[in-house]
Picture 1 (cartoon, one colour):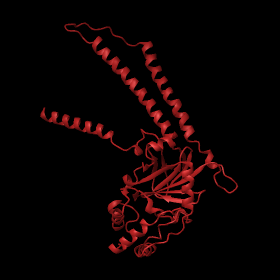
Picture 2 (cartoon, one colour; picture 1 turned 180 degrees about the horizontal axis):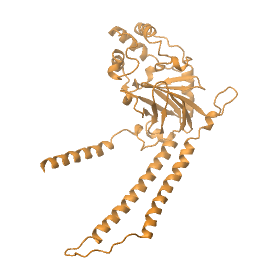
Picture 3 (cartoon, helix red, strand yellow; picture 1 turned 90 degrees about the horizontal axis):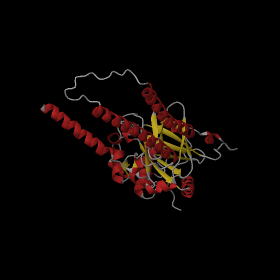
Picture 4 (cartoon, one colour; picture 1 turned 45 degrees about the vertical axis):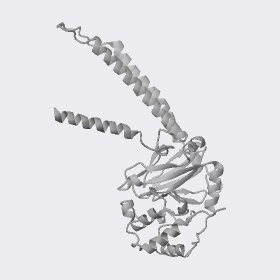
Length: 360
């Protein structure tokens, strides 16, 4: 009896903790606070299905309670109740009602599925071969980082996705190694990125709702891909049309950075010796995909996170450069360059923190 009571207490405690923890989180990682058209439609479907399930549960509980109290055996009543083998009206009723509920849920689900799969606009090209009336972003997933290429704008970024608000943004999704999954909880999704073949879909951010959420969101890999799967994050920054156009101009104007200061120049030498074979420091990287084996570091000094998950400061950058494996187990940077001395790490940190867009 004591053992059973102890197990019950443990199960109760775990259940309470699970309920409490289910309410933890941040708005930019929540599907319950949609920030765009796709996320809102998926949220509405979730609410609809939840209400249907709640109504079914309420109906079943009411019927169950009525049956328990109305048809329970009374004291000293040994009579055998009337044996009912079937009731055609009830059988028709509990067959038709579930069918109607499924239709109510299935019709909007099918409609939205086809609407959200409509990516014809990204295939309409102009005379120069650029997408005519749509913004297309090529997303390439890697162990354990993300690359975002704006093919019509000549811009490549890593870990930081910048999108305009109040318009559809179309994505080509692929992977350079194993299967990953592209997911921005607040915007909608998710969809797999495969080593072979390309998946396509679109998202849209609402300018009013992104302002409420502080204009910063985060995306994640939603497919178990290795030891650092949980650390495969990226930042999403929605901007107004004018803000996005300004960002594009700033990115297109970036040239090869010039190190300022003796320490930064030493860092540039270290970078050219140990890092430049994999990393680029300008967003107009013209190398083919196969040659882009590591994140693009253009505007690295303006980012909010290091390696997608660490707070952006010099101390964390030095820890990352000293031992990437300790921060992201299984990452491809580990073992691809020789161990750096403390002086080299200090110099490289100074150089990388100085990689910023030109101030106008």
